[in-house]
Image 1 (cartoon, one colour):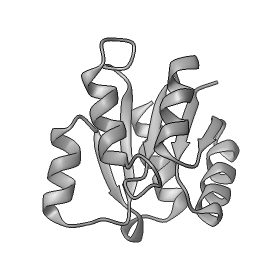
Image 2 (cartoon, helix red, strand yellow):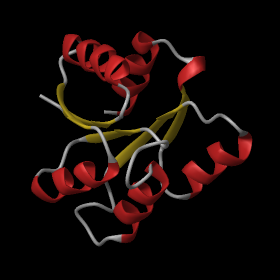
Image 3 (cartoon, one colour):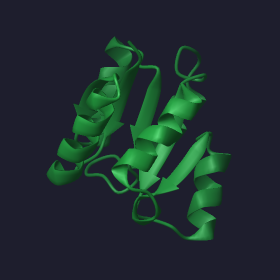
Image 4 (cartoon, helix red, strand yellow):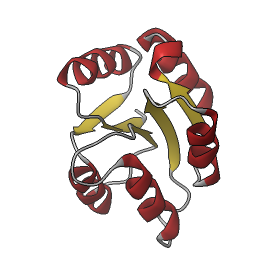
Length: 121
């Protein structure tokens, strides 16, 4: 079973995405802030990281920088950004920092997000 770490701070979105991903057959772990997410990654390596940008403590940009600047096993971790931030410059920044996909929350239903993830892993 493929595993996903969801770093998201909105309880409603955590519930929705966790449910949808589990229904699709994924194992899902959740971190509600960047600190917790990075600690989790030191213990386990998921197949994919679904990352919000606006987070308490350490934001998604810093999480992504930390992951991509560390030596393996983090460097090859697939990261999909799922954010409300939708400016072109933000999308470009996410991809430049190493995300393989940038999904804007308002443009994708939870089911569509799951389909995008299934294409990747």
